[in-house]
Length: 484
Ligand SMILES: Nc1ncnc2c1ncn2[C@@H]1O[C@H](COP(=O)(O)OP(=O)(O)OP(=O)(O)O)[C@@H](O)[C@H]1O
Ligand SMILES: [Mg+2]
Image 1: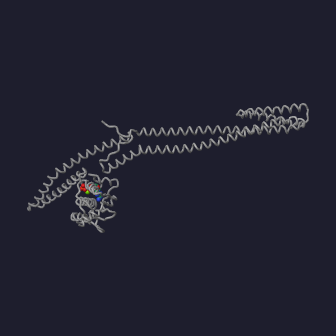
Image 2: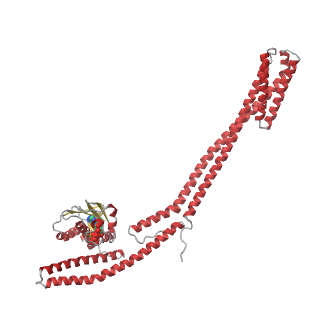
């Protein structure tokens, strides 16, 4: 039965919730903007209306005064016609003012002003028809004119107050708009921050964790397990990865057991064959040259086979995590020297320059294994470079590490193959014609890692390669013990 795992959320749920929250935020902002736009529109139209009313009151007052001024020229037909026009405009302005007045008090005031102005105009017309002189008429209509003017003053004052009020309201709405905009921006920033943190915590963290586990798995940690505490879809991927890596681990263990078994079973007959060949060569002195050469060739091939079987056994031991180290304190320079002395007679024409200057590079390590690693590197350098090209080996001690570099001027390694060369049984395309099992470097890297060190390579195809190795130097206590 499969137990439920994960955080109970799903990627789809999280993204839907984030989108819904974003949509809600947008909706709220849109509603707020619409409300404020409505307020602004209302205030601005009130402002326009009140300003227009104010203009009309002023206009009525001007027309009225004009009417009064022209009334003096009773005998001048031009002035009379002009007065008729002014009267028409006066009435039109009064009608328009009536349309613009909205407040109750204002409507009544306009009506009152209209009544008083009409009374003034009518009174004047009557008196003119009776034939009274301009001064008499003036005297009689003055109170009516004063009343009309005072109505207009009052109307002017009301409208002025309304304009001031509308202006203040517009300012208020403006201030509310700015405050709301700032508040919305702050709120949106906080919400986005919370959403980003939540998404980072719920989605990004598990994804990065998964990637890191895959990287660990890829770089040789077969037991790497992904955290299944994640949103549903990611936890499904993590579980699938964990099941896959566990299955690969089981497969690998079966393969290793098989390899170890085969290698072990081959070891004894090979040793017996080698003994047989050695014994034959030693016993029969009358053997002809051809047979002797065949035996020598057989012996060499058997040697090669034995080495391959040893590599296979070591690989299975190391891969199964059963590598046992037998550490001692020694100078890496001496170990390197010993390996080079062993190899020199096998390639007598080859120049192998060894630079061992500087202080001794004491390390606490399994000497046999380290010599095996140096041997693998030197063997590769010899194998994958032309016989006339020199090989340089440098040993030094710096920053608490003993460092070794093996430099050759051979075929080099293609950039895309650089990491592959450390994989078991991997062989380069450029070196396929040379014999080998593809185990040397993988064994070397495992041995160096087990010593807390690292091994790396820089290479230029066609120009050569530099293999670098470093392991920690022995600590003071080890050195004291060594001195005793
Ligand atoms: N110095 C080098 N120059 C060029 N290619 C190299 C060098 N060293 C290693 N390689 C490449 O890396 C591959 C793996 O090397 P490794 O030593 O693991 O195996 P091998 O040499 O093929 O076989 P063996 O198990 O006998 O050592 C080689 O096949 C070769 O293609
Ligand atoms: Mg090799």
